[in-house]
Amino acid sequence: MGGRMSFDELTTTGLSRAFSARRGLPEAAASTLGVRDSDGLALELAGRTCCLTMLAGSGSRWVASLEAARAAGRDMGADPRAPRGLYPVRNAMPFGPDPAPIASYALAAVRDLGHHVIVVRGWEREIEERILGPFGFAPGSYRFATQGAPGGKPRGHGDAAFQTLGLWSGYDYVTVNFGGDASSPLTALASLAAMAALERELGDRAPGLLLPAALVDSPAYPIGLGPGGLPASFGHAKLRGGAAKAGGAVESGAAGYTNVGLRVYRAEALREAIESIRERYWSPDGGYAIPGNAPASDDLGGEFALDNVDALLAAEGRARLLPIAKPEELSPVKSLDDLPRFERDVGSVCRDWSGPGR
Image (cartoon, rainbow, N blue to C red; front, side, top):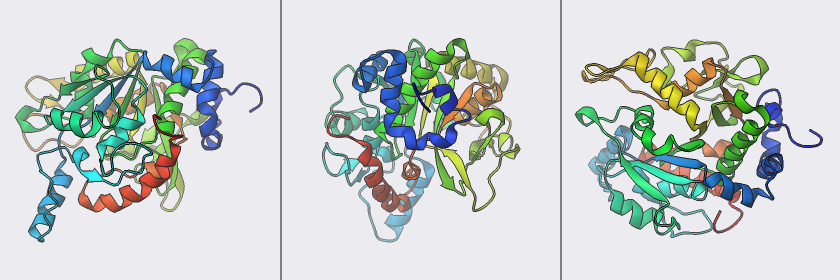
């Protein structure tokens, strides 16, 4: 680009250049922000950032796969009530015990980027003993938040963000990730650094959401682009009744952008979007009734997904893409069948660690 990197350009008309620039983004952001280097920038941003990690529940597909394995005579030794993030897999990181719980990847990737709020439904002692302690989380650097579940069913990650609003709204930035993903520490640091750099470049015009993305063939959940390279539509399953029908769909066999298991928000924008959705689509008697979301099987309302927040911010022109993620970061564990791919792909993702402590 010549001279100082323009993060405004990189997240609009320069999307195609983002991946090749990924390793230099933290240093470029440090330069934009007048910080000595990327280590100094990470330290500065950590005081302004809340890292929200979703680790509540086990998931219906995970439980079904455990039951199917048991019926076939293969007892995997997993408690179906436990979050699947506690299930042990091969550790490809350059530190920590081997094997390591699935969720150790997601948590280790953001360990040094802020204060941690970990959304759970029990199992706090096991998470501390098997992930937080062994992977170097300092006492006082995290807290647990129990997600309420009307009728025994959590009502989505958007609802979890609403329930924890009082824990993160005082920060400048909020990262959100998920305990079953193959997370990259470089994607996490570069995305948070890029958001801070965009705020310096654009001031009040800075986006409310920066969505790390990967370029893949035939994405299952494509992101459609509008004028200027801004995200215009999302193909998430949560939105298939609404925004997924908008323009920008990717034809079979074609390459397209899709998001990975990390989001970076400006806290104020996340709060405003949550409050707007709650005002429009929540009622005490009927729960959530968000157009396009699948209705619940009970009478307590449907789901509030973070995908709904993303779609709202995109419709308002307040979302940007940052296509720096590797395709291997799209390897979430939803069932036992996903474990071989997850263990294969994290080998590539973990090369993004420069060494112990990162």
